[in-house]
Image (cartoon, rainbow, N blue to C red; front, side):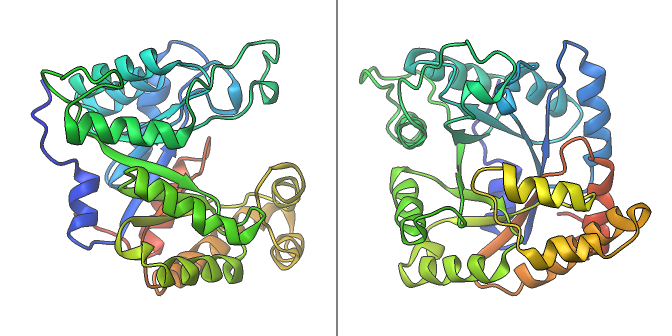
Length: 307
């Protein structure tokens, strides 16, 4: 049974240590060995592992089940939960169930629209949005009540995360939305992956001016590029992504067989710069299906050993 003690991620951030989290996508099937293999590649290199919730609207092993597999390996999971697939009853039920299994961290998201996936005819739910989900988890934790006002015998005391995209338009609204998520109860923020450092710094400056960096822990998103094609695809096809031309040109300027090495170099330079930005409390490495590179990045960035 979960004893309600602080999560490892919460402790690391509270202690002022520069945090490192990574991302892990569950398999399109019921084989637990796939998630365990990914866990082995991340173990010892990160403080916590996000487990995606049917990312890109494609059916996968449930986030809760995959979190438990990682937890049994000694890794600390961050359960991602989207509002696309569940109404408020199911959301609250799954949160309580997850906490009872020892899952202490949650990242609250809306989720990719079902038309992005391979079952576009599926109905979405969106009974509540991600902002309401944050507030719901906060109320359950702090007030010990569900959304109907019923007193919970054992509230799920989860460490609450939310996502932020500093690169979407309108730019001025980005910090307003961040403030709303903090007011709703977010303890930590994981951002969209950072390639446009100038824009990210401008966003951080605005957040600092509003006093937001004193209220929440911000982890900057990192995604190592494998190729010029990946850089161009992310620039043109991924909503809310900002990959500047100079990054694409840099990836194009090396032989194909060395492109992934260049991507890692860009990644390491980005991390070094992020560590000098006031208010950035860690990084979130999103290397989906390239988990083997995470350890190298963390080691070469000088972020070992982990606490």
